[in-house]
Each structure stands twice: as structure tokens, then as C-alpha cells.
Amino acid sequence: MPSKRRSTKRPYGQPHPEFDANRGRGGGARSETGPGGEEYLVAVPHPTDKTYVCPSCGRDIPPQTAHLVAWAADGLFGPEAAAADRRHWHTRCWETFGRSRG
Ligand SMILES: [Zn+2]
Image (tube, rainbow, N blue to C red; front, side, top):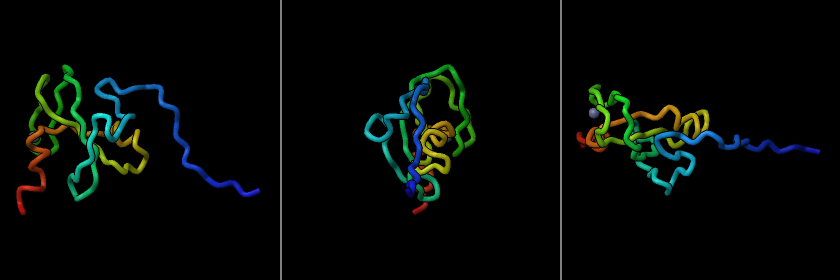
């Protein structure tokens, strides 16, 4: 009896503290074309007390600064891993990244 391989999804039990990435599209995250022309999911994180570094300009994103997070929509290791590897961007940097020259 042949068994079809199905993509196994692990049950969700650990909601991200910043936002609910599991809700994905339509639940706060939106799909956008990001660096390299790939599809990314973008969401606005809740304020934290962490400082992040913007991958576009290399500058800090201080706490309480409005910014966004983006991660590959089609991650190699699944949406959860991709979301865990998300990057924090200045909102303006994301909007202008790769779009200012054309
Ligand atoms: Zn930036």
C-alpha cells in the first residue's frame, strides 16, 4: 500500500512574543516583494525593549521605534523557521530597499 508523503506541520504551541506569525497572511502580515525579488511576509511588531540592526542601512533600530519585520514567504525550512529568522527593518528602509533605482 503506497504511502504518500505529506508535509508534516508541527502543532503550534509557542506563539511569538512580538506577533502571531502563525496567522500569517491576512492576520497582520502582508506579502510584499522584497530583496532579490523574492516574496516576503511583512508585519509590524509590537514594541519591545530590544534594539535591532537594520540590514539595509546597518543602523540600530532603537526600542519604541516604529519599524517592521520581514521574512521569506517561502523559507527553506518552512514558514516557522523563516519567521524565526525574520529581520527587523526601518520602515523607510524596507520601502526603499531595491526600489530606489528604477
Ligand atoms: Zn534602516
